[in-house]
Length: 325
Ligand code: F42
Image 1 (cartoon, protein in one colour):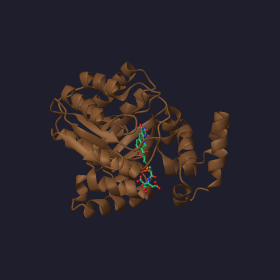
Image 2: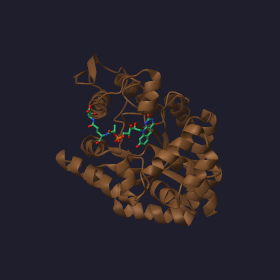
Image 3: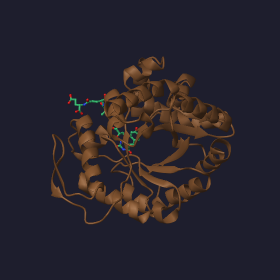
Image 4: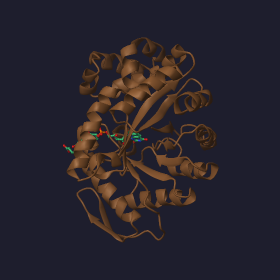
């Protein structure tokens, strides 16, 4: 099992650099930095991390092809690969519609856009002059003036077609989920895609990009996870809630509490079924058991995503000592 950690650059870059160094010292293999326009820029953050670490792999977790041209993405992550001595990973996905609406960017054909972008960026990494005339992507003879190396590409995916696409074309897949039921479904889809493309499914790093919260006191860890879980429930398709036996009406109540900013009320609406379905949380032993369950189903990397725990430094050390080992 590989271990990753997610940081959101809503925190200052130097604070993330401190946490990332600590994660490296505690045995984490990968750090993933989210990409939303309202936070600090993902490549600025990764550049600082590259200079402050020696071993940990550095990924966008995840960028998207709507806000940045694919040539720019290839150049940006290529520079991070050079700066870090070959430790970069490009996590890419179709992105978050709500933030694109706010930016005035039209969000069309996410599946097609993802496929065409991966194909284009792979062509840039090979050092060729790139011409691509797709439905969503158009590049007319662009070529990077430096060698990026072949940076692995991971696709952010939850839906059946996106997961299948990851199996066909990506080196890894970042799946926003925490429960074995979701991975049973996901692994089947990834395998189908890999088989269709004549690939060995084992080539694909299957990452549980999980809401993670660990503390020596289970209750503290669970409470810390509740707000993130509430947002996951509110944003989940009904089919996902039904898969976990969670009443779909809960989505409306939780959505209303979020809209009102009633975070106290939210804590009472998030049930233990919800935290169990949508997070890995509890004591180090509880979390280690859940990780073991995911490994059996075919997960090859667990990413400790927000909130990580009530105290990030303590939680990073607990994961290092008790889970990564
Ligand atoms: N998004 C961000 O913007 N920033 C982040 O930092 C970020 C991090 C992140 C980490 C892990 C992760 O798993 C996702 C993350 N995301 C982040 C979200 C990510 O960018 C993607 O939006 C998300 O992973 C994609 O979710 P999804 O697999 O459910 O895909 C959606 C778009 C979907 O509807 N998929 C359908 C499916 O079955 O998979 C396919 C829909 C389809 O077929 N569409 C057709 C097409 O061509 O696109 C068009 C259909 C039509 O009618 O036009």
